[in-house]
Image (cartoon, rainbow, N blue to C red; front, side, top):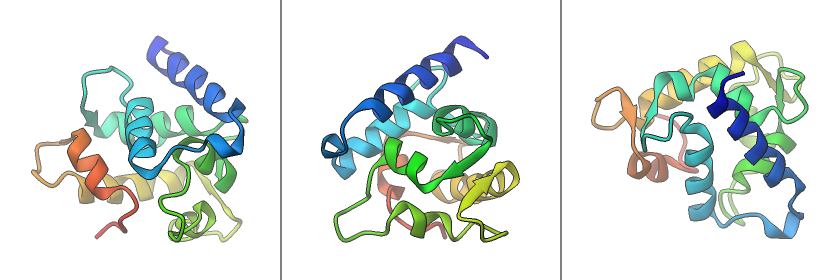
Length: 139
């Protein structure tokens, strides 16, 4: 485990320990999610940082290599009070319909999502692109 990945895992543990009432607002959740995924801290998300390996390191709190709705909610929170739940967001990529994302399901969803978020096509997602896509279905 690399130092940035270890740091991300520690941050995820801190987020999971916070009470449910302390869930971040959508804008704050977008910023927090971006910071957790930005493994090298350069202010940009590369495909590597957004792919399944890094996403699992950040989101998979129990280490079972499956991403549950609870794990997604713990890091990103609800997009909006009337927005989709994490379970509703997962169902799009949950090919085996078990209510969780395995590595292949997350990798496929991450690839599609990254391409959708990278609006300027430079191969990176900046905080503005990430925030603009937060809670928006991938095209």
